[in-house]
Structure formats: structure tokens, C-alpha cells
Length: 104
Image (cartoon, rainbow, N blue to C red; front, side):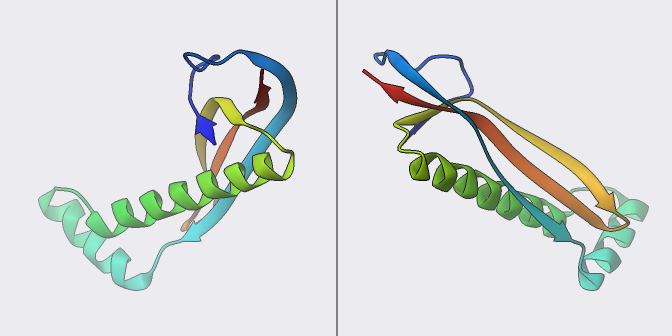
């Protein structure tokens, strides 16, 4: 599966647009991470626990998008984007979306 955030994939010609595909996940904060995050607010620096959590969530949403494209018989996904939103106190949704396509 070829995936890009551009409208085209070099060397490929899109013959059919199969429509929007998406994948999402919602992750909640962990109390242990909250304690570490509170300390980082005092001294500054990266909150590695949250960085890891968001990276894992992004990968999970991405894989779900790919699985949806595969179910449609797509050869690739173009115009891929990621979106993050807070859905409740301490929980965020990661959404990956793009356009599933077939190549000539």
C-alpha cells in the first residue's frame, strides 16, 4: 500500500478514486503520567510518557485507515492527514484520513 500526504504518487497514475478512508483511536491519560507531567510543568522539558502515548495512537489510527483502504481494494491512499482533538478531560482522539485510490 502506497501512502502519501500529496495528491499524487510519483510514477503512478490514479485511475479510480475509491473515496474517503479513515482510522481513529481515543487515548486517555494515565495517572502515573499525570504526576510526571505535573513535575515537567514545574521544571520544563518533554513529557515523554505523553509523547509515546500520542505516537502509538497515531500509528494505531494510521493502521486502521490502511485496513479500511485494503477492504476497498485500494492500491494507495493520497492526501493523508492527521487530526487530534480533545474528546473529554484527559482523553484525546487521533484521526488519520485520506483518499483511497486505484492505480492504472
